[in-house]
Amino acid sequence: MEKIIGHGEVVKSLTSALAAGRVGHAYLWLGPAGVGKKTLAKAFAKRLLCEEGGMDENCSCPSCRRFDGGVHPDFIVVEPEGNTLKIDQIRQVQHHAYLSPVMGKRKIYFFPEAETLTDVASNSFLKLLEEAPPGIIFMFVAVRADSILPTIRSRCQVYHLFPVSIAEIEQRLLELGYSPAEAQERSAASQGLPGLALGEPGDHSVSYIRPIAELIRLDLISLFKFDEELEKKDRKDILMILRQWETELRQELIRLDNPDSVRRAAEALGKVAELLVMCEYNVNVRLLLDDFFITMKRLYAS
Ligand SMILES: [Zn+2]
Image 1 (cartoon, protein in one colour):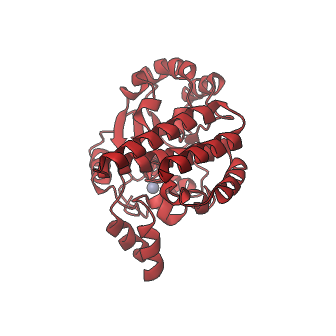
Image 2 (cartoon, helix red, strand yellow):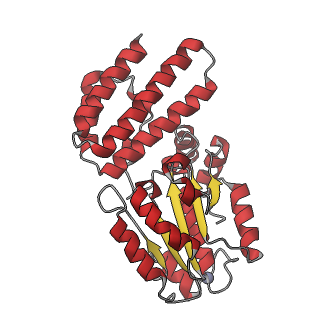
Image 3 (cartoon, helix red, strand yellow):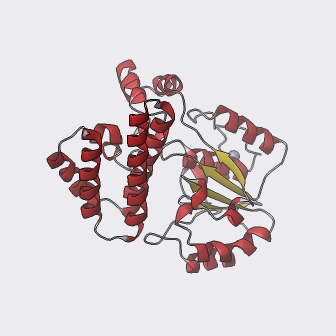
């Protein structure tokens, strides 16, 4: 976990809990997209599964090697089928959880998009969460706390991850071998989100995660073109981008003190929240986005 950018306090607390053998059976990682929730959760999972106790970052035990290779049989990723995690998937987990771990004493179920758990699936999950067999650990990742049912949330150790300082990101990028100019540019544009600074290749293209403040400076033709491109992305990527805008506007709202700007940012935030809800259900994302940007242009022109 030494390779993680930022979140020093969280890493320290997890490391000491692990050293003391105080391991929970459910964890919930919360924070904006790109802040490092999945990276941190996976790093911790690797240590929990390590055959040598998980205290050595460069351990090469069979478990760590398989984890690094993405083929650990006791690290099970549960991703949504389509837009939601369905009750059938939860039933499979319930069944699977009672089988012994393949390699060691622990087995981890990782839900990288826990907000896609439907209420029905969450409810059927509760019993398992309460009476999970020993060694079973659940890890949930979500952007917003209120997207997870309180009954699930209250059974988890919750970690809130906040944006990392720009200076820390820049420093780590230099350590990772970026040139000073690139480290400076990437960290300055990162909004404190290491995932954004690193561009997470393969996960999503960094050019799509553009700050809303930058987008609304474009003309409508360019915005419609952006919508057209965005529409081709997976729904979960689109939702991630919208949540990113939501986080950005929330942060802006805290910073602002001019009443007019506050009102405008609040209204924009409301529009993004609406868009998020509609995108979960509506098929025609492009029309929704076009409409959204027309409203935003009007809002920010006044
Ligand atoms: Zn190991």
